[in-house]
Image (cartoon, rainbow, N blue to C red):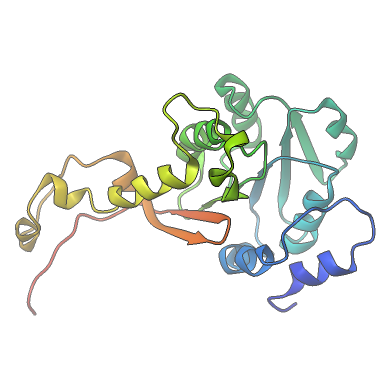
Length: 223
């Protein structure tokens, strides 16, 4: 199967159960292709009509465990033997904790939920720690960061602005210590959790993907 499998699936789907922007499919494949045909757990926030969960099952293969979360109880009808659906609020930490405790650590988390700033930020802040090392956390429809009706935080912070701030965390090492200090081996630097656990942040049109990998303490030497 080639890199356009997701787009092909979408274009040939006649069930009226998928609502996606067409340019997302190349972004999905760029970030998710390495997980195909492996024993992985995929957690998607936002079930809609169940179409994307079926798409992920087709894309990732029979070894994948597909999990959906939605606040609408009617979405439970889309659960089957290959897809499990939990009903609850994506901002409710107790609910999210109960989901993770049952399914284990996800390899991929996709936020296609309510799209408000608080929902996106709250879910990310809680679930990222439970994402497996080497995993990807992808937030889609971040164009809502620019639409007033989705701004529901007192501080006015949007997920896009939050992700921009997290990009500074990648370089927290150099806020803590001058870059020259890393020309010597250092055993410990008291940087933020994000600096230690974010490998990269990728910004796309309406999508932000964050790769989780443990970071090494910077070190430079002439050899």
